[in-house]
Length: 471
Image (cartoon, rainbow, N blue to C red; front, top):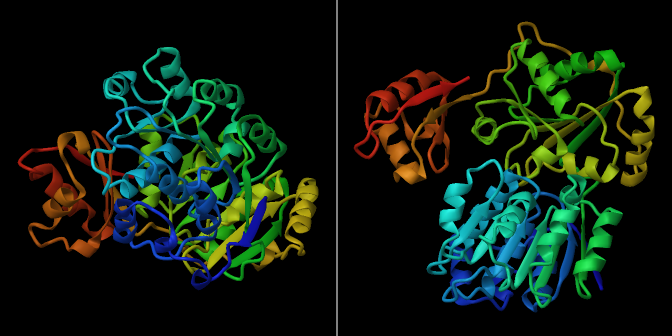
């Protein structure tokens, strides 16, 4: 059974969450989060999912798929039974953290629900301590989950729902064998949900292996969205970086995500743009966890204008207002290309997608044109202009604070400390990102030094913390 719809569908044509047979506590959470009409993927996936059927669904990032499977697994959760009843596997630490946050929000009215994140790049000690009492829901990456299974510190014999999120990326990253070993530790009676942005043969193969008569759902990406101005620019190979600079100077996006195909390209490009006085940060798999957290906090807080990432590293990136996506190189897969550019023009905003290509990438260009069913909109390099004295400074600066959730520090505490003297207004403070032992606070450029003084010389909840500006 296959369903299909378009992500361009008007929200007025989609049903409300109130039409679903959900437990009352979950309906309360949904109302508190101001979720009104379902997205296309939610409208199609939730009915069979709530009936206990296996589901394989294709939908792009930002389509609402996390809420779909989170609502499904929470609806049947027994919080009085202290065993692991749901397992969500994700390809990256960033995506796992994002998914766990979404589940916790939806579970806020379900008393005593325990959600635990298990990912590599984190010390084992705290995870082992948290596992002494079985969590209801575990969200993690395959490598770390498997390590806990091998140490017999995690038990999955009571799992009712297994979710493979961004399953295509997990296969690309070589997690197939780890995933299969993990699945063997779960009951055959479980419900298995596969969510994927693309639909390669590997996904179909794993579905045939681990699912039982799954409902197959495809939510078509809007390939020709009027909200995305999609441009292609042919360049000489040695002029690629110069052309990227010209694109940024010509359009001056407030926030820009640049895709490269390799980690080394990300590093080299961030350095090259930095030498041109642009605030660019690279995101790739070789970064330590604290470095990744810092890069993402700066970009999400509008303290860095340009994020350069590989496809895998960008999975789980949650930036709602992304002005532009630039493909430094064309993806080898047209589905991935659509997935990349779909990160801009969200929530009714206008978006820009620019792709650079050389003669050697004509095959990829033809594949994208065929996939989209439309010719590429070609723009000549000569039409791009660099304004005299061009500078692109981010509007915010991020401050690092060496205190977080474990220190009982909340976002409201940081906001209160900064605004207590009334010299810094609340609207001059941007995104606040909390971790267990640290926090990041975005503030407007003009009050950055003042904010740093307040945090270093003052107290938060009666305690002094170290703070510094990130550049």
